[in-house]
Length: 138
Image (cartoon, rainbow, N blue to C red; front, side):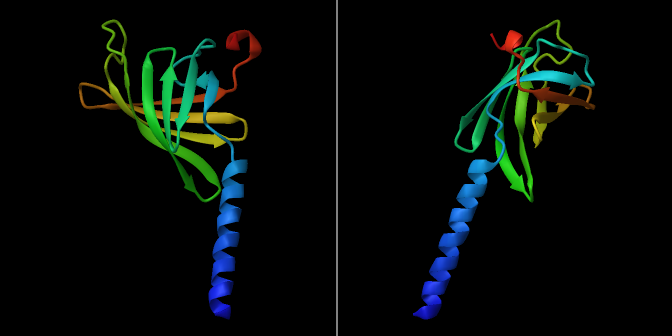
């Protein structure tokens, strides 16, 4: 009986620690402004991330959207998923699907997007986002 009580106590303590650790972790949801990208600068590029449990819906104001899922590995908080660019005849990535990964590093959100082109090649887009400045957030 004593061992059972110790086991229950350890499981309860571990559960409480996990809940508290999860509550204090950085989050993905909200609005983010692009501050750097290897695909070109865009001070008006924003993404909005809406959380639905562990699933996150990402919508960008420059023509793409994705669904990602948060994943904890060690101390890093990351999310991975898939998405697609809008079908726009004049756009370089029109209707192109992609895989992407998000990682929080301090107050920045780092994004790696692997876009699959029609010719079979994959293009890597790397971008860094931060919370929007007040002028853009209006």
